[in-house]
Amino acid sequence: MKILFVATVDIHIINHHLRIIHKLHEMGHQVDVAAKGDFKNEDITVKYNLPFSKKPYSLDNLKAQKQIRAIMVKENYDIISCHTPLSSFYTRLATKGLKSKVIYTTHGFHFFKGAPLINQTIYKTMEKIAAKYTDVLVTINQEDYENAKQFRLKQGGKVVFIPGVGIEEDDVLQYRTNKEIIKQELGLNAEDKMFLSVGELNKNKNHIFVMEALKEWFHKNQNNHFVVCGEGPDHEKLSEWIQKENLTKQIHLLGYRKDLRRILFGADVFISPSYREGLPVSVLEAMVAGIPVIASNVRGNHDLIKDGVNGFLYPVDNQEVFRTKMRQLMEDKTCANRFVKKAQEDAHGYASEVVDPQILALYASK
Image 1 (tube, rainbow, N blue to C red):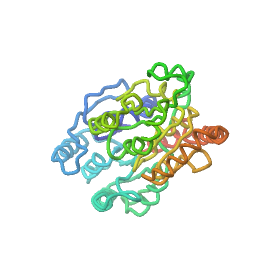
Image 2: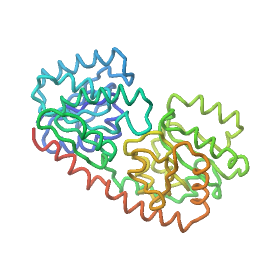
Image 3: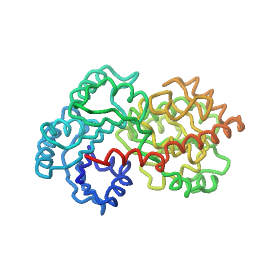
Image 4: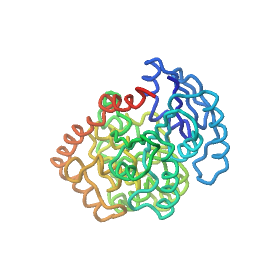
């Protein structure tokens, strides 16, 4: 079969789909990719660099829609596999009248419980419109699954729940290292406490919440450190806040790190403070690595973390509850160890060996 994967930018394909693309290629399928960027891979037969934009009203998306329509008409793909909201919207519209099977995987609807009104209107409307060009709508968390069942898909279409894109546990655990060694590499002392967050420096990932909530902790105890791995548009804003609060020695913005999984094993607590998640791989990797997790009680996070069972959840932006639960994680080792053991057991349900057969079944036939 000929299969086309579509995403807004290459990094999404790189981070989430190369393993499945490799397996599809091994099975004898031709796999092409359309996304913004110049990434190439031996498992990808043809890579199209299209001008998709993350901005909803960008004219670039209309240009990309016209280009991908021409590509699909010419190549006559058996399956179109869509990922990321905007590229998926324009691509699905472009499949009108074509015989290709259209699979759309939402990694997190932009409308969600607690989302701004604009998300609830614009993005939900876009999803409803594109649903009628969709044969299979794949969701990776329960909230999205329930919302997706309300959409009217193409005749004979179906909504499917698959728990994520699959995590390779051995790929995480191979980086297991003595915690003190990692801290030393990062310029910390062995006795320092390292709180770790991972994700783009943007409003949604909400790193500023942790910084503000624990500000007094940092000032009172020089051994407390907050490490953030990721880059993004809020870097300058966060850096200015850190300098203003005189916390440059305790809050560390490391930028994009290729050794992220190694750094993970230096953490005492993993924090996911986001306003919105699909099904966060970073939290899953922390669970596998045996790092106690505290997370905002939002979609995606609460699919993985059950409060008081395998980690802690706190109401979004509630500093008091966050600090209370952070303190318990730091002081009650029995509690933290119990969370870690249960989290590692739960994470196995999201392993690639469990998830990959479910994903590949989607491509079993046109």
